[in-house]
Length: 240
Ligand SMILES: CCCCCCCCCC(=O)SCCNC(=O)CCNC(=O)[C@H](O)C(C)(C)COP(=O)(O)OP(=O)(O)OC[C@H]1O[C@@H](n2cnc3c(N)ncnc32)[C@H](O)[C@@H]1OP(=O)(O)O
Image (tube, rainbow, N blue to C red; front, side, top):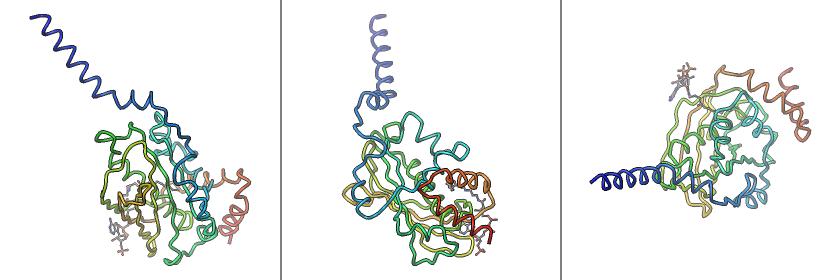
């Protein structure tokens, strides 16, 4: 009798441990074979003259412990890939104060989420997708509104197909229109076959939140020689 109870206990603990920790063990022992700057959309984006702007990468890494970077991107390497691209020909427009809706400025975010970020087994949690889209909208609306911080007023997401862990996906976020303080955006998550997995729309409003923090981030960019000329343009614009 005691032996049966012991066996049942062991089976229960074993089952629980497997269910609870298997994704972590799998992630730990699996060879991702993929560096953060290496992903399946890379050549397509580079052929389309998309570049990785340091101005945006720095928003992730420097401003006073940004949530996405510190909590997700650096936590147990939960995001195997998280890269941002925008079209180089739109560089100047991104820094202009008056963006016409036809400019349709957009950014591409490539990501690959590890099993740490699954909800159902091997399916990326919808809350993470909402976070990535929200953050993409935040960054794009900040740039489009002339470096004024924005806040999410409304975010709608349609989850069309499951997004799998350990696979590359691309978020395309674009400005739909700007009306005063209101920035309307839309986004799509595509898989490698260009199948639409997720669609979203958002309304962001310019706010007076954390302006100094983001300004400090922009100041740090001055150290990056590649985009010095753009910084000069921003500073000149502010003095005018
Ligand atoms: C470089 C930066 C990178 C940043 C990346 C990180 C991005 C993170 C994004 C976030 O997570 S932000 C945090 C989550 N969001 C919030 O906490 C926002 C909470 N809500 C608020 O604080 C206020 O509701 C808000 C600032 C959004 C608006 O309040 P206001 O008092 O400034 O504006 P008001 O309520 O007077 O609305 C202004 C206009 O917007 C309209 N509006 C406001 N909220 C709306 C809504 N939800 N849907 C539709 N319209 C809306 C409103 O009707 C009105 O339209 P009209 O001017 O035409 O009359």
